Image (cartoon, rainbow, N blue to C red; front, side):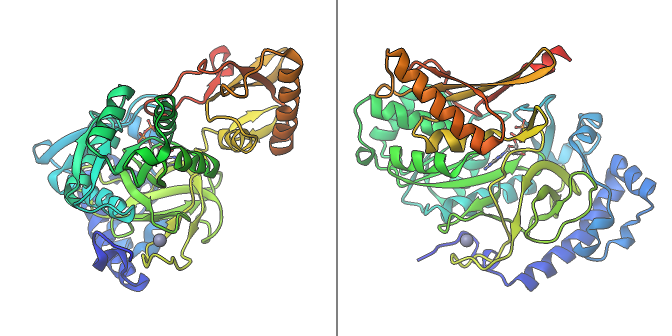
Length: 435
Ligand code: ADP
Ligand code: ZN
């Protein structure tokens, strides 16, 4: 039987969710206009007044906020309340440049932890579970968010933080962890290390994993589920909106339910900013409906995905987002062709390789180059040149069929590509160094 953390909200009919959103947005816009001078200026420039926003349908009248705004307003410019009301600061992991800091009141922390608790219960968590959190703790939102959610559910929480994989495994086995929370790349690494230590997937007590904070493919999901003997659930979020738990997967594993009572989602055309109808692919934009300290309106995430309101068998009514296929700024333009790292990962795992790879893009004689370093497993590794060359050719052809351009494949020896304990660095774009 499906269980929910807050059934009365999670299964609320759509019209009722809408009513809640309409009520909250009116208050939130007023709150922001009165307290955040930076955003008030943007609204004034656009000629929008708080009274113009009567329901979520009017959100499209509001100006967007971008990461550039966050940097410009750093550190206090988007604060929605007195600092004395704030109890916490978190910061982005800085994947794509200067860090952003976000502020939280106790109310904001509470609703964030509720969102994470919903995700843990959706993955089957109860107060009988032992939840091992190996997302990084500290400024990064992963550890604190899942830690708080785990407490709310009543799980016995193991606040491991990331790293020290031997200790992770020792505690996982000795203390019978049943739920694992970390990035998918770290989950794959833990799975690999367990196997090396001679454990079989059925030797651990894990039943579920809650993995997010970076893009991962369905192929990667199957790989992790196999190596750990679990069901792997996706979780999505970003520091700007609070952290992980903005959206999470249910037993259906077909898209993540967005916590719509707290976050209003839109999909826009990233070029024109126009709102796209349900089912179309575009950039995800969030409006936080009830955050006090860092109340961003129409924040452009740069994550590309699709929304659907199709009925979900789990009984949750909140809109679902597809796995983001990467950020718009993850997309590489190589010899004029758009390439996403996720496409490369799909080909690699389909062709039977491990998820240990690195993509290097460079420019030589005014032409882009794409090199993919792929690690062989011990059974794939061969010292026969002819065999390796044959493998490289097969993989190059499969890549060309998927990407439309042919990369140079380098098959490298086992254990030569560095493993990730947090967000994996998949792409090194050397072209940026030359500019
Ligand atoms: P940074 O921008 O420094 O990485 P965050 O740690 O706040 O800062 O990361 C948020 C971003 O991480 C999201 O905008 C998204 O691109 C990515 N992300 C988070 N969860 C997922 C997920 N489940 N699938 C794909 N990408 C994700
Ligand atoms: Zn569902």
